[in-house]
Length: 447
Image (cartoon, rainbow, N blue to C red):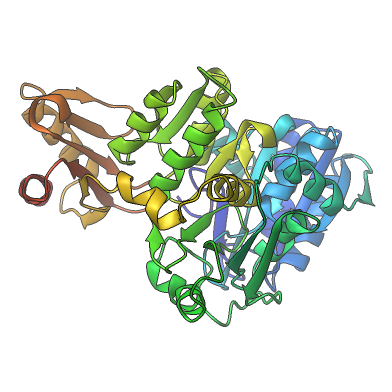
């Protein structure tokens, strides 16, 4: 697949991903989309300024007006796309990847993502067909815009806190620092870790999905009992957030989905809310109990956003810590997610740990990856054939076997989009059942 991935373009800078390649990608993006005005933002990686210059020049040579919004979070780039009436947007980032990586996330107008299935493959073909000496098609221009204040004001409209809260925030030297503009003038105050931009990410990986990266945040909270309502850790481009409670314990990301959906439905009765198909059954139950329409989504931001738009959904949560809001152009906003949880905690007499406790009623395997000796597609076909006669089977993303009503468990087996791996997620009503079914599925996958 190279640098052209299922959801974005990403690679190690200076190898496959070079300034010259980025210039070609920009021209191909413009030829594919034919935009007049494109918003371009970038993260704090050391390679981002050079890649911005290359991409901007490629757009200018295709007669495009480039709106340079500077160093921003990915949610801020989505906001800029929609609020500035652009024909598209580009965010130069490698998200949570380590410092050697960089890339870009591409959108159409209205922050609609371009994925492998909806344009990245077409752009790849256009790049492959370039000789490298194409003359400029036209002469565009670069103009600057600062969307920080407008984004902060936009996000604060989402808050309805009942009392002030103090939070602990781990910015991981990344773009969560930019997201914090939303907290100025609000009922959120905070103490921060690693609040200086550093594209080398010297303190730890900017990836809250790896629980070891939460250790410093947890230590800060545990060292100051009673001081913080909860903690938040952001990834490199701040489109994902991980949460820990007032005791410093990790809050599973799908539990956050359940809590936020339930709260939003109080003022949006009957609305659709999505959860990705790896999430606990608690999400479906909480949404239904709150009078909403629980809907299951595929994994991946482009798929989720498309399903949200088709069903006019107000919110979606993904197990990887992406939280999507209709209020932010059907895109992620980690500061909106922070406010969403703050709204809930500030309205309750209970701390976050006690609000989460009733959700801890089932048993999950966690995502287990297996590198198989046969093509992953063969493994999925085998799982489907074996379990179709025993339980409900569907193929929204990989193969899901749902025996919840009859036997109290479900399992999803899917392929990685980037590696020759098969991923298993399984949940059961009892620990014994979870362990037995987990081992059963792993035996089938590894056979």
